[in-house]
Amino acid sequence: MTTTTLRRLASGPVLALAMSLLCACATHPAGPITTQDLAAAQSFRPFTVYWVGRSFDGVPLTAADTRQDYDATVGERVYYGNCDKPKSILSTTGCQLPLEIATVNYRAINSRGNEGLGTRTNEVIRGVPAVVFDSGRSIQLYTGRLAIDIYADGAARALAAARAVVPMNRPDTPAADRLVQPKFRKDVDPHLLAIAAQLSPAKRSKTS
Image (cartoon, rainbow, N blue to C red; front, side, top):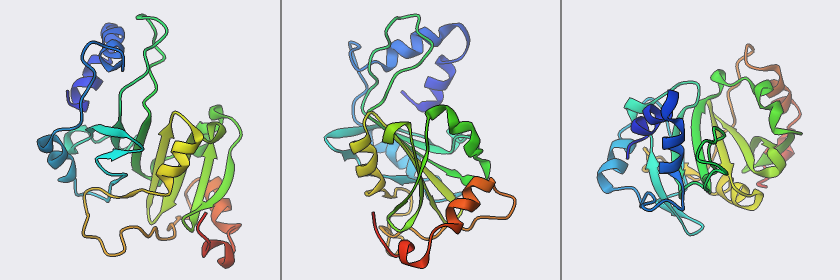
């Protein structure tokens, strides 16, 4: 099932049906992504999209956005595993994937909108600014003009993914495992400017 199909199912009165189709305990949970669907996702060219391979921590990649799926407000996403079942078939709260990674132009992000995830902590991960939310289960890494948003079902998995992300659609990129410093513009969210300003050269050279 493509991500476009899932989005269409998740709109309006068929939201409950979409949630049931995503459940890990459904009769036919999504299997590993097909070679054809992965190739379609890897053909995305507007910017580098990050992932952690065809499987991570024992969880397979099950879906990935293509150019057709692209939404600037949420970026290009890759999905690992299947969702936990919602508490009710009528639930509208969605379900939790073991791991989801979105790559987005950070100028489309309003970090204040993440305050509902609880206390946020500024960190340095792989030598670049990062913000940790939701008791460690959500992490945003900033590199170049991109944010890499990591959402996991546990803090350990989120941090492991943050330490492992590499380009999906540009595998031949030199030093693919190296994240470069972000290029924040002056009109970006002031909170992001503050993160960059507090990072000393010594901290930037560290890998957390």
